[in-house]
Length: 327
Image (cartoon, rainbow, N blue to C red; front, side):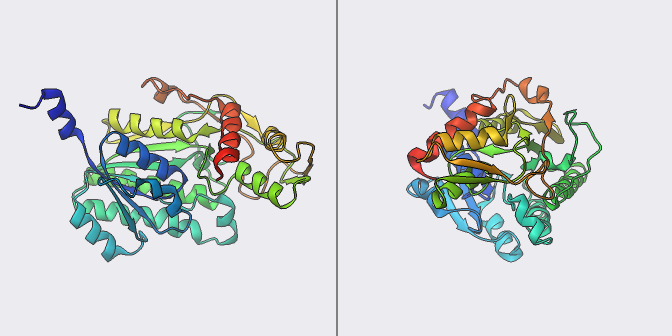
């Protein structure tokens, strides 16, 4: 006879869809879900995601990779019908804020419309549990200590606007169609497997010009950076413990790190530690960039969450990991 604790574990194992699962954060989330014996479907169109991020999972019988665009509605419905998911972790998005400035329809399609398609499929196939990856960019420029109920919400990027619109639709589905939802709003996430961001850009620039690093802005931009494993821990903790119909949590690293400090850390760990850092000037890197913000993370900390790495240590650890293992 099986021990009762083992039977309980079998019951708790879930069939989970991770959209954007081959991406930076999504692939780390797939690792964590499999480690706790959930069965995982990793859906990705490989626009930003990389097959190399999930290559180590291919031999796991509880892992399934599906190359699919969320905007392909018939194929998405077939997947939901066949797999019979218990929950969805919706991470698929255009996470490159600058790219949305060049193509103003990009975030509408990849952040907002993909969310509508996921919600529609969940409703049709009676999937009642959702975790949604949102962003601090929904607030726009606001240097106050921001809690989950604070406002106004005035995004200044297409990325932030599309995520805010997605949150609004999710709220409707949660309250009228009973999809229990956890929303995590987080800022700059760093770690290996990233595809963009300051650290990624600086390392790539130094590969091309080892003795010189151009930095957009004046270097004073200051944000709380969170290491990817700390974020994944927050995702699983809130997913497991939140029982509200629509719940929002803020996640951020401890402390703040300036762009100047990031540039100095990257250069110090490069092939030419004396490389010249040159700033282009201005208080931000590009239109739509929020140069600084501050999160109140009391709600998630009340659940027992705390980051293993503070903001600057997360940067140092990320640079070290990338130098050892590559992007």
